[in-house]
Image (cartoon, rainbow, N blue to C red; front, side, top):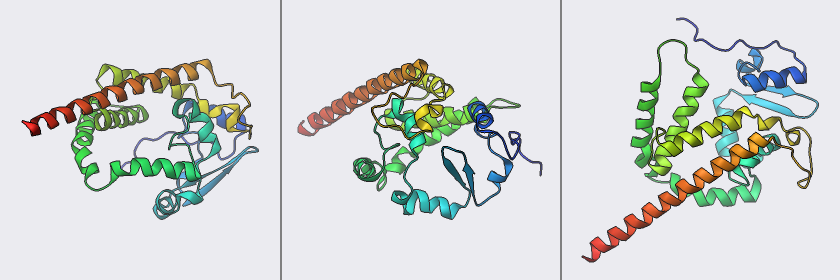
Length: 235
């Protein structure tokens, strides 16, 4: 069996600035090969430590069994704050628990099964888009993930005009590399300006505006469907 194609791993030791350049270009090839072979590996810099877990049991413990013992990194929060605000993706502690209790009903019982046809359709569409030859997997996977989100939450495929606009703006947001913001490396007080790039803030505003519009349209459609169902029952 041939080895699947993969990015060339970096040298085992690089400077912090060299790592940042590699990270911005490609997060996978920015990591040394030993990180992908260890059950758990540690990466140290003068500003932070990060850990990579490859042990499935350990991943389950962190994400499912004891999430409160492994709070989200402040670096991740700083990078995503312009886009996500104080949402469940970046919060910790009681704030996160409160938000999880709100969204948990969406994943209980048979609700995930109800979404499976939409997820399956997104997967088939992703396969149909896949070209012959060398393919940029990160772009294809991001495209497929976005399609799943839009089909399950808003009942529209990624080919929809608004969904396409959100996807392309998110790609622009990623390319602006907000995770390299000063606040990602230094413990700054909340009042201190984060100095995010103008392009980052612009993309975040556009995405939030588009998602707000989609949410409002979806809520209006659900109210209309409920109203129609009530009229039918009275008739």
